[in-house]
Image 1 (cartoon, rainbow, N blue to C red):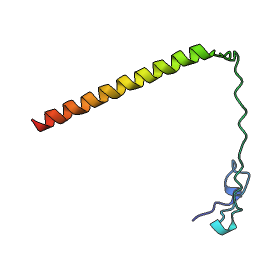
Image 2: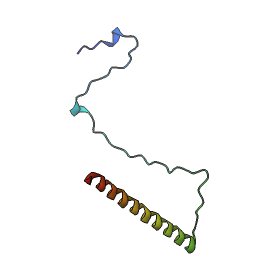
Image 3: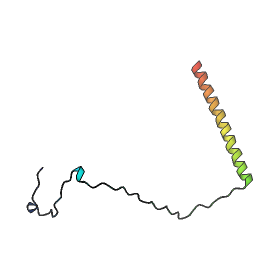
Image 4: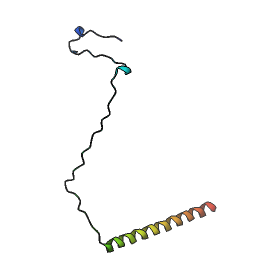
Length: 84
């Protein structure tokens, strides 16, 4: 390694020292708190009555039942194709 004396360079005004790993100070990991994002227009809270909630649950149950039927039919069709 070559070190150029400071008198040979006009631009360099600070001498830097090379440190080995054992000479380096231990790094301190700092966690930064992230501020909660502020919503300009917060969404309104929607409260459902018991009837509306029950209708929604029954609709979800029906959709899940139909999806299970479709998956079973698709699986059975694949089994038949592989068997033939």
